[in-house]
Image (cartoon, rainbow, N blue to C red; front, side, top):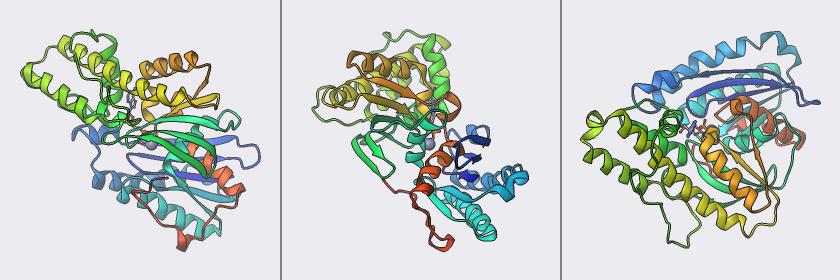
Length: 331
Ligand code: KG4
Ligand code: ZN
């Protein structure tokens, strides 16, 4: 079995996956969302302290399988340095003690392989990745053959939901809160700018949209001055502009890509409005759309284990003393 560990942000998670059958045997996750909610975002030092408590507890739950574990996969890049360190330290200690090979896993590659936890590997694919840390479109051909076709110039999709929720005085993470409000709102009440609408650039930018939301909140008298209906309408109008932007830029790429399979992954891929819009776009271009089960959209160790299995088979292992944390590694 392969033990996998994830701690790149605010989720502590471990998983056990059978190496031959790729069957997920155990998957545990402790989300710190409630702890960070009162600060309106992730506080790295607090996250790191919580990982230090929660990761060993999760590992303890895998104790009955300890003798079956043949390798350890761990997220070592990118993410918050102090939280990545917690998972990497535990992985190194466990691997050194049990004399096991270590498999370093790039977090974004893990998100991409979340597609293959319950389904056979299907590559190549065009992958639209929308998470809290990243927004990009990639051409994925293999484990180490991934090319970034478009990326965000500033905020990510998940981050912009979080910031809009924070500006309205709502909780963290903002994605599910804004999505739920938007469902009840009038998306045409506030006219917000669709980012880079007239630019030929195939890239994403969300800071201008965020500022436009900020101005509307100010005009409504700040978060305290807003009615519940104002919040719903603003959430819906924000989501409409964001999706229009995501689709406009994705369309430009899909129109010229021959690869017939398209995937949507990352924490914000749990958003049903985003899913629906990407599905409709794919239908227009005759592409097959793939998504991960909802439980594997946000950060989890099962996806790290799934990538880790293929990396292990490809011999991409390192000695414990050579495993490094790279908080800002691209791909
Ligand atoms: O992939 P993820 O768990 O962590 C990173 O790798 O960043 O993504 C977390 C992000 C958060 O910003 C959260 O607000 C966003 O995903 N998110 C959503 C939804 N659920 C989570 N964004 C929009 N709509 C959602 N339903
Ligand atoms: Zn993630």
